[in-house]
Image 1 (spheres, rainbow, N blue to C red):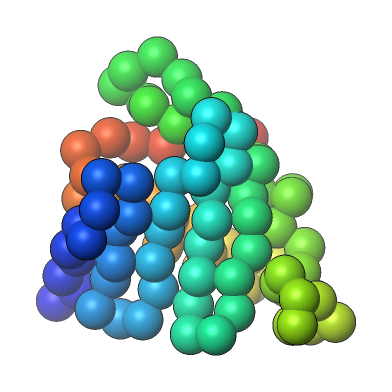
Image 2 (cartoon, rainbow, N blue to C red):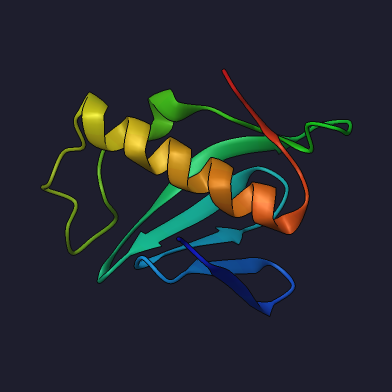
Length: 95
């Protein structure tokens, strides 16, 4: 079973190897191993808490920017963000 921790108020870390950082009001930083990316988002009224835009998940940040993210990987990233946010006590909407 997956477990999470919160090493700081805005970071959620999974024991499966990814982390989610609420990086301000309009972005979520997702990291997996040595790769990371930014997902456009916005704060929403509870119970949702956060809206994310998966169409903005297209490629990793440098130095891995050449590696494109396919639909299967994008869906995995969205589900990872969803489970991390659920651990933190709020839901996400995906638009």
